[in-house]
Length: 181
Image (cartoon, rainbow, N blue to C red; front, side, top):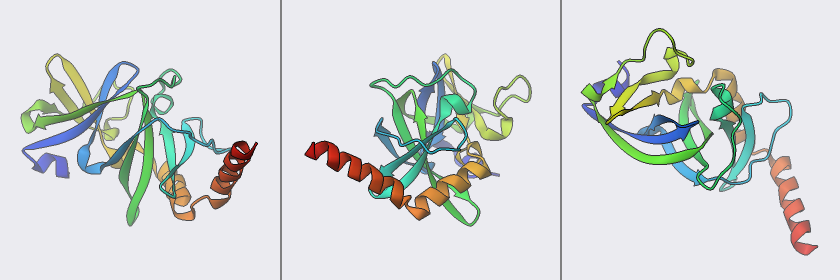
């Protein structure tokens, strides 16, 4: 059993992608950021938006619309980056998920969550902890530890641990030059 199956009720941070509701377990969510500058990284998959500086740490950000085969993200005032902690090897990887909008925290009782369907899913059932029922809407509850592949978590952990110093120093020099000019 996973941790989600042992609790009677749980809280989930809900967000929108292409008009559909998704959610992460709040216990895996570190923080939510308004959209901020993301620095692209060459030679990475298209759904890796790049990295951002989170209080001196480099965090890899993935565009969830592209990752899930949806139309390309359009940045709006509602766009957000959800910072999560995913289990990776013997530790944790800190990763950002670019989403259309964060909707808030939802509480689901155990009987409000159904297992993911076995057929007709665009997403692998392994990536989904369950489908939450909220009024007339369904919320796809994603498994944070599985929604990011091993390769992606490896990239994220390398950026986080290495600090991508050259990249951020380059940004700081550009910003200083712009401020001075």
